[in-house]
Length: 148
Image (cartoon, rainbow, N blue to C red; front, side, top):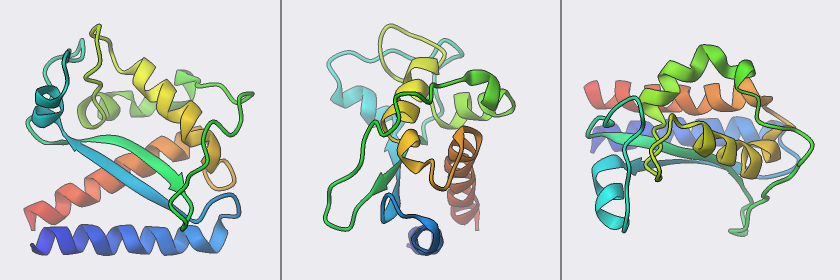
């Protein structure tokens, strides 16, 4: 229970910081999925080309949202996903943000989708590198809370 409280507190702090700067949305949802259950709930599931993910939560996304329950999506079609901008994050993303879609792949399609649909809506605060780095930092904080 303590780890859930720590995660919620960290997320609330992150959301409050977001509120001070964001004009295009109200807060972020940091969404994780339980990797083993994700495969159980899908008709077809494929492991990433770099191997089966750990039996742990994996990042699904970092989603800008509004207080009324709606969310912006696909906000800037001119800003493309460019993996060269996040090359230093790729190994951490493969571990912490695995794709389970078929056919098996290295995660690029999933991350590209998340960037196009959600990341481009956070550009008032986060460039591409900062967007992915923020999600990875939240995952790291979550892991630290569980260990404590």
